[in-house]
Length: 245
Image (tube, rainbow, N blue to C red):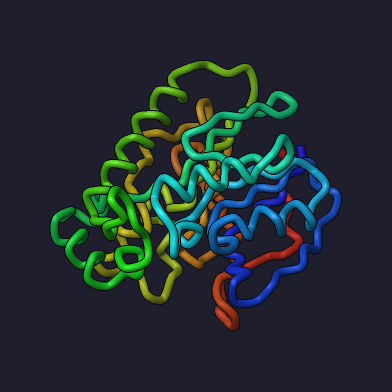
């Protein structure tokens, strides 16, 4: 299977024109555009199945649950929205979720959550119940649900490869080459979920969010991100990247 992974295209700033036309599956690991605009773009840009995990930016100017439902409604049998959802294509199992973070990866979840709430736009631009602004506790709850869902799914054997798709990173190792990393805020970009990995359970884990493209192995699982980032940002993006699985 030829998999074309993309994330953090941020079409809201500069439209991306795809370079790959012969993939079997396109993976969009979040931050493609605001709301449902990335879905309409993907429908025109690709002719193969597209698995789309919303990133945090998809929810900007929107609502944590209502925007997700709007995206699901805008998808179809070819453009599939995943948030704690499973899809099997040609024997490959795909498990997808936005993920969010539990703010625990850097060792002090309380301080990391407080710092994130003060510094990150998510807490000003995303709403939830009664249209109040989201709080760290809302995202911690989402991260826990995703962790438990993934743990359960990965305990179910699958006769074929499993690919996990998340927007947020599953390990701080994905931040090592990021010039802004190395602070307690790293816990707002990555979780410490290496215990979910293993080549016998997860062949490939694709993520976004860090604006640093990576390709490495952890506990037998290959971790890849292919992120364009903001205009003029040096993210290591490879527009022609295709993974043979």
